[in-house]
Amino acid sequence: MILQDIKKILSFAIPIWMTLLVVATMQSISVILSGRASNIDIAAVSIGVNLWIPLYTGLNGIIAASSTIFANLIGAKRHQDLPSALRHSLYLGICAGIALIIIANLAVHYINRILVIDPHVHYLAKQYIFALSFGAIPIFIATALRQFVEALNNARTVTLVILTALPVDFIISYSLVFGKFGMPKLGGVGAGYGASISSLLMAILLIYLVTKMDKFAHFNIWQHIQWDIAKFKEQLRIGIPIGTAILCEAGMFNMLSFLIVKFGILVVAANQAALTATTFFYMLLLAMSMAMNIVVGYAVGAKDYKTAERLGKTGLVLCMAFSALTICFVAIGKEALAKVFNNDPETQKLIAVYLEYVMFYQLADSVLTTGQGILRAYRDVKAAFYIVIVSCWGVCIPAGYIADVYLHRGITSYWEGLVFGLFIGAILIFARIRILQTRYRKMIPTT
Image (cartoon, rainbow, N blue to C red):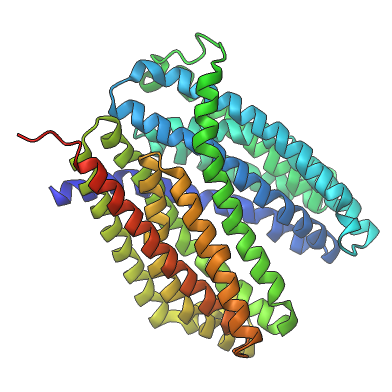
């Protein structure tokens, strides 16, 4: 039974993980190509990315509510309600895209009132955000469709779509950044247009697949377009706490980056490299969280709470096992890994030190991240949100600040605060899962 559960979880997690890795690569293309164009271009793109990504991930978290709704409907064998749920997810995606366009363009327009920015860099940052805006609505439409396909256990289809869009993104971005193949030379702004075009391509391919493929065509998702305010509110009720929690997590890392600036360029570079390494490790945890949301959501939708509890326990143990492998990998290869991120020997030494904290970070985050997926399967999104707030803003940042200012532990203060806060969050989320499982266990009929 346990082996079957592991196989089921991995059948969702592995394709989702591959998709997330490709998406992360696509997000890196703008920064990499702009860095090779000029320092002005990379400065402008960096400003644009730091504005766009937090807003995008927060709004994207609201769309993530669809995954829970789809899984619960499938588990309850209410497949006839899936088309309506998807349509309302698409409506929400369109609204999120419009909101992202307005907020991001206003933010970049007025950011020079907060930060001292070179006028030319500011102009290019505005042009970069404008270029990204063409892909805002398509990327959210693609997100809604992707979650629909993944909930129906066809994540490999999504991976193939994104793998198709990846080379398109690179070729168009490269052509526009450097003026190749007869394209105009736009610098970093060209990477924004490349990202928008690849987002549009993903949306078009996914629309075609859910319309034409036999696995999805029978749902006739375009048959009715009526708006049900109750279903839209349900999406928001589940999605807003998820999106806000994601914004809070991103905001915590932004705050930590701000607090460590005083330690100098060397420390900042080493710290950023270590955080980048955690991002790639985090992708696997995030894939597990999304997979748990689906498989546990199936069981909750079917009111099979015994299976939901068993899957939840198996998923947590499996994710901790993955983290244990990551810890071993980092422990053995932290010096080699440091060399991947930087050529300077002094910076490499600092990266290796910070990577030691990553090992403890991973263990706590495996429970915290996977636990959020389990709670969302039960639609207990508010508890997950409160736990993230407490662990990130109530513990991580204050603990790091106190250790730095009052105990004079330097840059390691913030890593220690991060690890401590995540362990608190892991304990809280594990306790909340146990409370939910106990509550639902009482609903299981006795035989």
